[in-house]
Image (cartoon, rainbow, N blue to C red; front, top):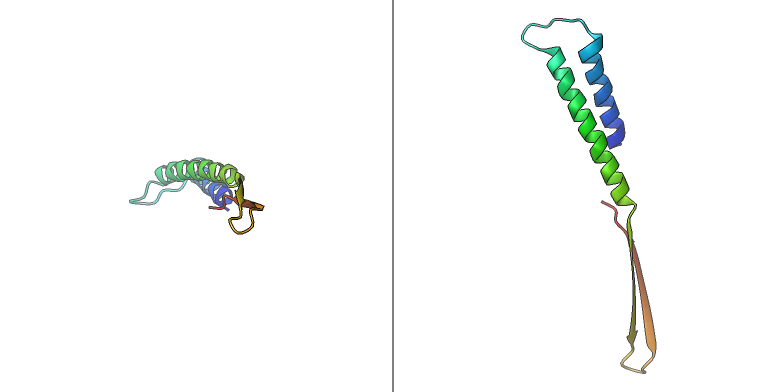
Length: 83
């Protein structure tokens, strides 16, 4: 979702900077367009970083001796880093 939002911000910013020839008193549309372009690029980069981070996984295996009867007990835990 963040990558889609970043692309949307990039497109809206590009339209404001290069496609519109509109003058609004008190508002600089080109500056707003450049700000949206920068924000869109930042959101896309952060989205890609978070997407690659979510794919990591952790697996832990423990073997201990049961004190009651001396049997070996193996416990396996798996988790996926879901932020």
